[in-house]
Length: 170
Image (cartoon, rainbow, N blue to C red; front, side, top):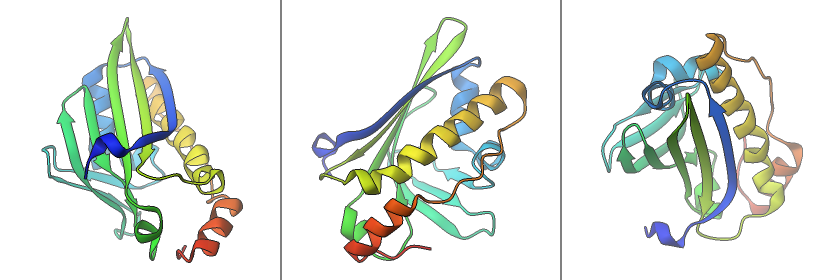
């Protein structure tokens, strides 16, 4: 896989009153992620080639991937493959980059979702809805000790577009 072939499709930047180390820990450990990621537990082997997994609250693997770049606490690049039937085959691999930079007394966290092929706006509507909710909850948890509870469902237009492609959904 050549990451130079991947073009950003979604980019979000937020500022968090925290330290780079705390943001890194929140992004890479099950203990933190369960609190801000709707009960999903992120498990990351912090080495290039290591496994990346996000387990649903029932323990099943919902997202799997591989660590492409690991530079604690500054940068993490992973493949992010939602385990829905035929999704990766139809859409290719998703590359997610977290960039963590000091910004005065805060941290600038930038998330980049990239693809090696064009992805329709209908399909991208899932990430465009999900990422802000996840990152807002992360910010709230690190700044106040309480994560936001944001109930979301996959957008209908994304589900319909995936169905047209022949990719299965939950």
